[in-house]
Image 1: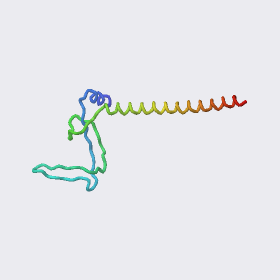
Image 2: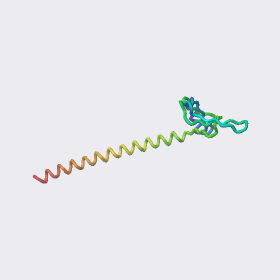
Image 3: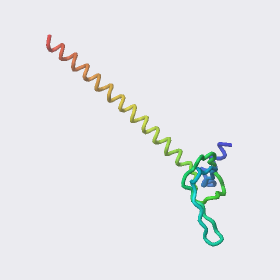
Image 4: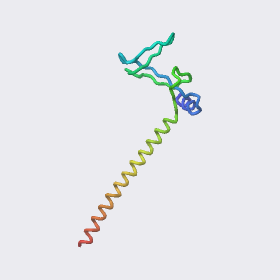
Length: 108
């Protein structure tokens, strides 16, 4: 089932999401415009469900596989920076130790 979802996301067949939540006491404001009511949620109590969907209740929602790929790329880059920094520190220590040994030999 997960592979099917990934395929749908990759093809762009699913590009929206839906969510379920509860609102904190006093965490919403209702207004009326004619026969229409608008609710603005200012504070969630709990978000308990987020799902990719074909037909979202809110058109502003998104669902995107590329976000995951970007995260993975950022994680790989951070790991590579950490490895490079570790190598730089180790090389610096090696050079300092080598200089110390050379100075001892020269002083003899």
